[in-house]
Image (cartoon, rainbow, N blue to C red; front, side, top):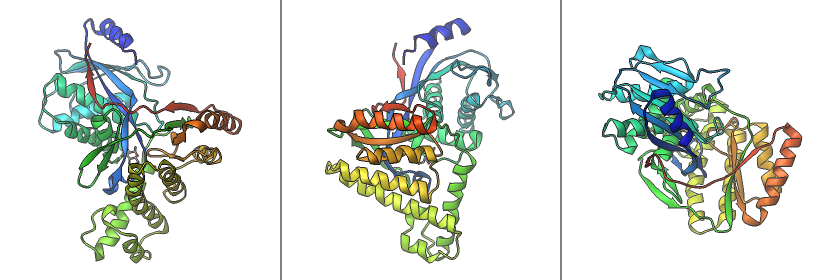
Length: 387
Ligand code: GLA
């Protein structure tokens, strides 16, 4: 993104120049709704990011400006203090406030600052614009005020912001990917031990393409409810198997043992998670062998599970998934939390043009919307832009 406009705006508003930071959105190849269950995920940071221009302002207030927000529905200016009672009313500003509060809770002081937020991560598209915003603000403040947090602590600060100031009980995947992204690599993260390895990803002859249904979602109650479903199952299993603390620790046999103690919905959701954790491990083996067609079939299995068992898909996502299947695309599935947003598609180069054309035309015909198409480029995580 060309940052000259927001830099100029910063100067116009605050009469001085600020430093520029960015933190990217993410894709996730496979391993969905596994992070808060202690399983594995396989995300990568992308070439779309949230940017900020920032400078301490010598007061105890934050002055924030977000030029991309729709001025009809939300104020683009927000000014707030950093005491708990000062929570701003604009949702976008609450992320900034939340990150500050979480840092303050860790015993650090944050003097006031001016900040402009912008970016090119589509909102509500499953590419984690929220995590990108949290990571961007956290990274910038850490650098500006020499707070001494490492990237992992910054990811945790972003996650805590979601939990405590946004109300989404998310896992760690999005913030981790935004902070730890590495050009050309996915990250295989074990969300129980938090060990991770970079997984070079350059599928020769294939492309990773996102198709955005343009059904925007805000994760909230429905997401949190999935999490509590999993927790209830864990509690039931732990009665007999106290070593089970997360669904990651459970097997399908253990789940069967509690079939009569959990609801049918909790059961089927938990079954999806246990299967998905194993599916990710199997997929990594296939990727190592370069068998992208077989890896792609795993992605379809994930979609079916997310749609029928975890119930986080929607007709538009299912439609694009079907279109991919019809076009012979190697792999396709709903990406991220679900309820809208994008499908992620592993497409053979030779099929790409036709698939995108056919999927776009059919989607327009059915839903009256043109889906957006993004070719994924895997990039580095949070950083300062050196001018
Ligand atoms: C959202 C959450 C993540 C993760 C995904 C589903 O993106 O923020 O923590 O749970 O959904 O995999």
